[in-house]
Image (tube, rainbow, N blue to C red; front, side):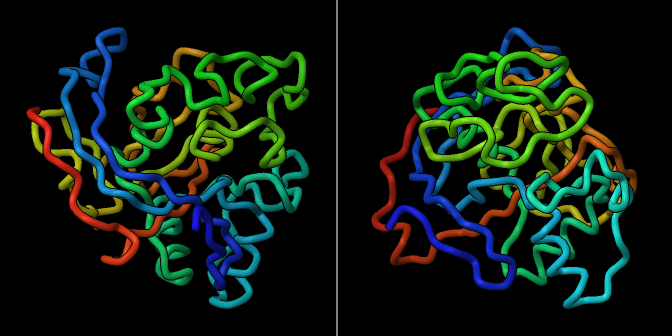
Length: 248
């Protein structure tokens, strides 16, 4: 089974097989260094960013406040990714839906298609306006200054859409300099602390769409270029036998 549907919110979760990859980059700023090996266990990740239609289910079920830009016609089509969501609100959605935000290591591994180590989380590992929505517009990317409908562009090799551009995505782990074990990072509950966002967006250029690019903002802030996608840990049966270790 390579994908499942999460009943509460209708998210389609794609199986991301575990493996080893090199996290970080020498081409970015010091936030992306040093490059280091990380072992990621298999997990489930949303095929698309969470949409306005899905977030509407959450609002109806919980009575939570509408996010900013909810009534903005540039961002509120049902199949556009929800934006204007603060990190605690993304966490609240995940608790309601029985899922979680991906860790930073999981996100980069999935975007890079694991050991393929792709530079961009697109179908080919390259970045063009036929493959992603980022600063400017051309080709299939007709969404200048707004988010694209999810699924507009072809998925990466793991079957994940919009891992480059469209909306930055909150991760579930706090921002900190590399040096610890990203695979073992835990959720940080202080909403005013710096949280990691990954993937770039319609508002940013190609350099910020690289799989290794780390962007950070305080969790209580909101933007029209920030959304999220959901993840779920594997059960023991889904995970299978342990992956052989690698020297880091």
